[in-house]
Length: 448
Image (tube, rainbow, N blue to C red):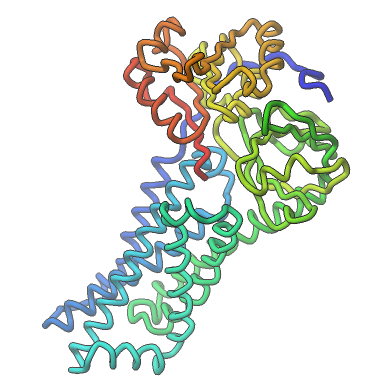
């Protein structure tokens, strides 16, 4: 497959679709208020230190149980979230929900045990032993708590930098087990959930989230892979440490993938079959082929270069909101850093209107897909500009002034930005300083 065969003309202009992020966050916070409602209706008067501690623990427990459901829901890869809100934003929401969940969990444990100890006139250690060993469902809840704390520790930024993606990914999946183990003590011991509409609503919440996980993380991927029968067709180098993989399959036009999106890929060979890794499409999807371009940054991405034609592929998706549907203006600027060029290369071919692509790389040798970009620029009348290190190794100027000079009328452009997190933050700040409205800066982070 050549990079540019079966090209189609740029798509018909689309009206920008409004992100559902605002209404969804409002719904989540409304749900949090609803989670506390059973306590509000049942609390009565609160008397004494033991009463205040116990009731504060009940509130923390209700909010923690609700946060666990939200946490799992954000892991379900629901298309409304992944393709309309954006996978990177959903990942940030998930990380924030995880921090809230751990804090509420610790608050619930400390406050309840302290309240029970004050009520019984016992030591905190004695009360802890009694609750864990004698209360129904508490041994399972204790195991679930310990698992959730391990997941929280390994998800901390400082720890995650020191462990491989594969290790973090598999530990992170234990969240499901932790929530399952902790659920039953909520409905058995939670005085606010023991009967009536509150108990039914709690079951409905957890069963609904479980249904989302079952459908979108298990059944939908099984259906996709049985339908499309993906296999590696070819692998070829693009730049030092950068490889393109062409994947062939059946009826891929029914997949619904769009330029700018990514899928999660699992190559069924060697040590790659147990890890699902997100890679962007580096060319618009064809009816029988997809292409990804991968930079060797870890064990999985390095092994991509060793794939052999015919290797079976398991994919999930498509995901991502960095698509033409975000466009609001007739002119667009695409800014790529390193391998962040991959989704932008696909958009450069298909995005309607006047398009300029600015490609940041260290040297000309590191310009993956550079020949394709030049050919596409000639074909569609777009512009490609490069930002390379100088002969002395000095980085190019990507300040607000430099961007203004390079792209006339910058503030009137939609800007699509993709690259390493530090690069993206610096360029985003420069774009805002150059007068580009936030609503016109469309960013997808690598930090998923």
